[in-house]
Image (cartoon, rainbow, N blue to C red; front, side, top):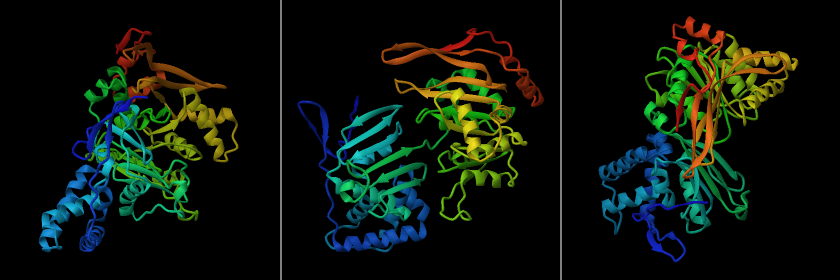
Length: 464
């Protein structure tokens, strides 16, 4: 396993050891006087009463933290707050550090190349950086230090981590947080308390960035742009961390501004309304409850979304009985809709959808459900995270029909040629032309189908 060395010289003392370059945590701990603690509580109350949303998001969003720091400074200076033995500037720094400082996690939060921060215990932290999971030299002082940082992250949300609530799952701004209490404290995690933070990009990728990242070829990108224009229904397939949500965001960026698109998620992570503020996105998020009347799962939200005059519907991920509602929406005038599903191949995703429809209680024969899926979905996009950490769209399939089994037409494929300098190399091939069914869709929507009609295997390709 590779190790990721992080420059923490501004935060901690760095020491050299005979075995490895590592960080020795010598964080200056601030002992707050009673007077400073009193000021801290007043500022917390002020932030919760006057700037709640900003306060909740500030911990994991460096841009928001700047605004919070300004509010803290304005509060102390405008009210001429003073405490013994501390200048106003020292007091401001004390309060800032206590409210928004995250100790060892701070440089990880700020690093734009880090997607996931995985703290397994106070002495073990991993990150995913540019697609590769690596161990870091980040350490907390002890279990109590780690728990104090966790509490600092979740407290603004009104949540706590204790024996009664040993697991916390929350959305903070554009990040997702899951924390668990350690067994020694009456919780569930054997190694000790832990926290996982997934950071989502705060802006949309440009075409140049996507192509430079080699997730797809230029031909694929152009095909997806046209597929969105002609309102094809698209299923994006892959395993955990394969980049499904990234691809979904890219495709959504091509939806015309005038069209009303409802997005539905268990936990709002796509943030399409923030990525594309010029477009007409309406985000909806599920609500869990023991009472069926007040619980709103994905299936229920899809049914309600149909009453909200959507042009398209995007479901972040289908996992169960909501699949039938999604398919029916696609089959009843809401072309251009999209969703994702966890599966290890395009064929497996088709079978999983059939199983999910059966979970809804519909007593239909498999062939009938198969034809329903085939009529609803035009294109399947399958992608995977490769062993070098890169994410690639490996297949783009058109669903032509269902006769005892799905009939696929392979439009694009990534052909690997092995590795070179630990990097997977290969080429993206445009394989077969689109079917007459899709040609009709393109023509009907006044988009030229010719680039996707006259293709011979391996003639058009992009090599990486």
